[in-house]
Every structure is written in C-alpha cells, then in structure tokens.
Length: 575
Image 1 (tube, helix red, strand yellow):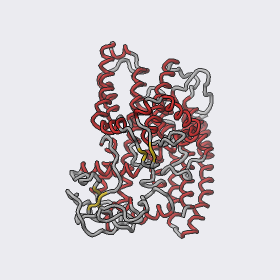
Image 2: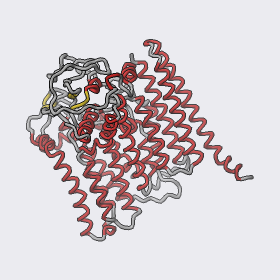
Image 3: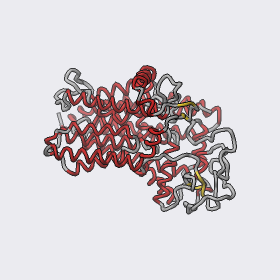
Image 4: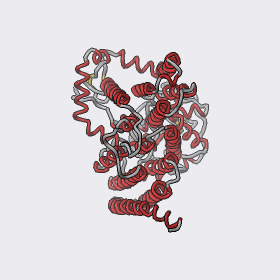
C-alpha cells in the first residue's frame, strides 16, 4: 500500500463524519429556511433571504474548515484551531444576535463609549455624570423617539426602545437601514466633544427618531447609566469604538467594531490560556464553544474580561502546580496583575485566588517566599477593590433600609443577612431547588440575546452540549491523573464558595423581601469556574474509551451552527 493510500485510509473516517454532520446541519438549516420564508411573506422584507443565505453559507464554510482541521489534517494544535473557530463562530453570533442584544449590553456599550472619550482626549461625561456621545449615535438607545431633546428626561410614559433588546424583523431592518456608513448623518468624522451640553436643534437620527440632548456641536448625552468598574474591563471595546469614530463610521459600524475587538481580545486570551494549560486544553476549548459563551464574547459585555482572566489565572495556577519546576517572580506578577484587572468587575470571583494553594510550597523556595507571593496576589486584588469599588461596597454594606428599585419593594440589608445565616441558607437552598434547572440551562445557552426565552438553545442541544463537555473532561486511556483527591475536594470548595458568594450578592442587591428565592442569579455567572470544575471530574473509575477530543469538539461546533441558524429563523417569525 502506497503512502497516499495510507493517508487516504486514515482520512476516510474523518471525511465521512464531516460529510454526515455537515449534511445534517444543512438539512436542518434548509428546514428553518422555511420559517424565514414564512416571516418574509408576512412583511415583504426580502433582504432577509440574502442575510439568511449568507449566515447559512458562513456556517457551512465554518463546518468545512473546522472539520478539515479537527478531523482530517490534524496537524494544527488545539489552540490554533480554537482561534479559527472562536473568531468564525463569534462573527456569526454577532451578526445574528445584533448589537445591544446581549444581557446588559447597552450599559456595557455606553461604559466603553465613556472610555473611548478618554482615549480620544475628549470630555467623557457632563456635569451630571451622563456619558457624552455623538449625536448620530443617540438613536440606538431611543428607537421610538420618546426621550426629550433638551436633556430634561422622558417625554412619554413609555420606556425608550433600545436596539436589539427585543429582537424582531424590525431589528434587522434598523441595522440594514443604519448600515456601516450610517447614512448621511454618519458621513462626517467624529466631531469634538463639548465641555458642556447645551441646547440646540435636534438632528435627524439614522433610526428615524431624534437624538437626545443634542448640542450645537453635534453632541448628545446618553440616558444609559455607565457601569462603575475598572476602565480596563472596557479597554478592548473602547479601542474598537475609538477606531470607528476615527474612521468616521456610523452607529452600526461603531457597534460592530466594538464587538469585534472584544471578540479578538477573548480569542487571543483563549489562545494564551490553552498554550499555558498543562492538560485539559480540550475542556477550555469546549467551554468556549457553548452558545452562552459565544453570545457573551461576541458582544460588548465585560463578562469577556472576566471569562478571559479567570481562565488564564486557572491555566497559570495549573501550569505552576503540575508542570513548572519552580515559581518565578514573573509568574507571581502575572497572577497579581490578573487579579487586579479581573477583581473589580465582580469581586466574588476573587475566590479563584484559592487555586494558588494547588501549587506546592517547595516550588516557591520556602514558606517565606510563598507568603510574599500570597501577599502580592491578594494585595493586588484588595488594592484594586479599594481604588475602584470601595464606594459601592460601602453603599451596600452601610444601608440599613434597602429598597429594590426594579421590584419597588423593600430589600435585605447587609446587617440583616449577616445576623440571619439560616435565612441566607434557606434562600440559597430554595434557589437551587426552584431555579437549578434554569441555572444549568442558562449556563449552556438556554436563553440567549437579552435573556429571551424564545431565542434559546433547544433543551436537547443543551443536554448534548453538556454531555459532550463531560466526555471531554473524562480521563482517556493512558492518561495520568494530575489532580489528587484532596485537591479535587479543594476545587469543589472554591466553586461552592463562589456560588454562595454569587447568591449572597444577588440576595443583597436584587432580591425583595417578598421573594421566595434569590432573584437575579443567572447561569452565565457559572461560566468562569466551569473549566476547573470540569477538570476536577477526571477520575480512575470513568474512562472514555471512544470518540477522541477532536470529534467531540467538531460535534459541538455543528450544534452551535444549528443553534444560531434556528435563532435567525425565529427572529424572522417575529413581526
């Protein structure tokens, strides 16, 4: 048998799997194309044929490319394949789930805009703390023109409609109408920011409404409150927004460029994370393929910073614990920097510092150096919290009579919860009992977009993705176990503490006293600790004997492409 015949024989099973999976996704995609046709028949928006066709072709091309790299050629490392798949899937998710449609994305967008102002040397906000934006960009947060033009507030009892918050055919129509060039209003490059926003005639906005609080210099104020956190959480998005403004792009171009830079940052950090991992690269890859992860990393959410930094911190700790011969000063500096950047975003994830305890003391060179390293890492986290979040922490811990704004009801105070541990345990238990399934589904991708239960990952796919991720985590024949039994228990303790801290924070900040379980806890909050938790499940009793990692990862990619094509068809049915 010739060398070419041997290569063909080795590649044949991969080719068959690639062809079978691609055919299945193509058939399902064409089936959902019938829903697209029905939606278009009701509105006449025939441009959606082209959009769905482009998404379909992009998805099929992605399956062909990823299948070739994962199943047939097999010469690329997993981290290199991850870059291709993360970018391609991220672009597809960003196109189908449009700007400002992700959870809290409008707040993250305006926060990144504020950082962009500072990067450009412009006034970031007015005297009331409201972020200054280009007048041509005001329409995206006021589609129905219900906000006052003089900055005095709302002119209607209705809430302002934000682009992407409720996804329908109208959403795609607005994006098509605005376009990367943004029409005439977006043709001019970014104008200078005024020191104060004065009166003036309202300019026409690309979305058909007026801009809010427009000054004579073409500047408006946003009515969306900015998130109070470290500016570094919005650095990637702000760079994209700044580039869009420098190029004179319109609102849609600005939004997509901000998203793209966030995706590029996550992909780059994912590559570095997988390179640093001593084992378990396939698990990090798999978590990055979950629909909820892709939804977040293709948006302007600061969850991208949290996901990227927690994953890299985990990789460094595992590398130092199981592969490196000693801990260098540079390693300690990297751990401290990651904690300082990530901590102020959500302080509850600071518990991942406990992963440092997996590293043997002898690798530090003795207890003295170990204590110095611990002080550096924890000190960086504490200092960042003090500088960025001290006022927020003082606010939540100091108020005795709290009021939950969204429910317009009294809430729990910090002192009340501290002195009522049984109440806290009861509420946590009730949350896991009544919301456990929703948390699990939400972690995988049960409700995408703006937590829209209709734009979901079908539950059979949720189960399939979860099972595949579990298979990736199991030990393979001949693979040695790195994590000991005691270390496995410690990882579970860290995860449990983080879950408890998440529920306690939402009990304090978001839950009225009349609620029977904790409100506001979402499955996406569990993603940062999912890789290390999955890796802790490796054991000697369950050994995977079939289906290599690359086949499982390709299966996840196929499910992702199906999920996003289905979501497009569902949006087309909403008119």
